[in-house]
Amino acid sequence: MEIIDNYSYLLEQGYNIPRNSVLTRDISFIVYIFNKLALNSDQNNIIPSECQPISEKDIFILRKLRNKYELLIDYCDPDEKLYQGLDEFLKAVRFLIKQIFLLGYFHKYSIEDIEKIKEQSSILAISMALSSLKELKIKLQTNHRFVRLCEFHKEKNPSLVLFENTSSYTCFGCNNAGNAVSYLMRAEDLSYLTALETLAPAAGVVLPPNSKAKPRHDITEKILAMYEDEYYQELINRSNQLQEIHEEKNREELKTKAKIYRKTLLLPVMPNFRS
Ligand SMILES: [Zn+2]
Image (cartoon, rainbow, N blue to C red; front, side, top):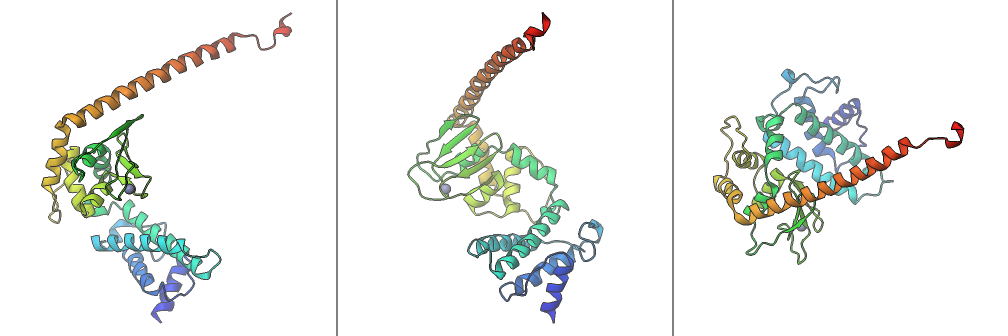
């Protein structure tokens, strides 16, 4: 009976998931989260005060489910009935994750603080401070981009790109990508909460006390020390200089373009008309 109820419940929420034994157990979990969020009448009308607390474990499981079904759907034929089920299921999971995020539920820290930590972290400093390579070579590209050998897969040619201005990274070899927080989580095998708490002091963000957090002060120290490192400073200086040259060139180009544009404006549109 419970199975039918869960599927019907989700249908009421607008998710038409065909009954499938692969999904049954995970479906009970998302219905449990739907209920916690008090989303049983109108999806678009969430009243935060009526929601039950969402635990870190809930969020962890939801994210795991999303990753699992994203992988699974890749192996599925779009014409299969199961594909439709997985697709609808994923929609529901993504919807829940988004709602939890919008509720500001992520680990009791405000979205503003979390964004500040992400923006104000130097991905270059983090990447250098946590490097396991004995000799780390970093290549500077334009627009505050740095390229180095990847920490997340074995390679001989560097394909890990660090975007210092957005504090994000992408590896074109193993497709790992993300922000400062996910870099730390991946490189040091930390939880989201620990990574945030560890980065906060280095990013100049003061978080409200949280008894659950166990920041890794040793990592914070390493990152802070990196700001004083000569090689790091030189890379940042050169990157800034390169960017200035680049922008200067752009400005010159714009000036030239503006001159041409003005000249064009001064030209009579229909020369013959005047006579
Ligand atoms: Zn990689």
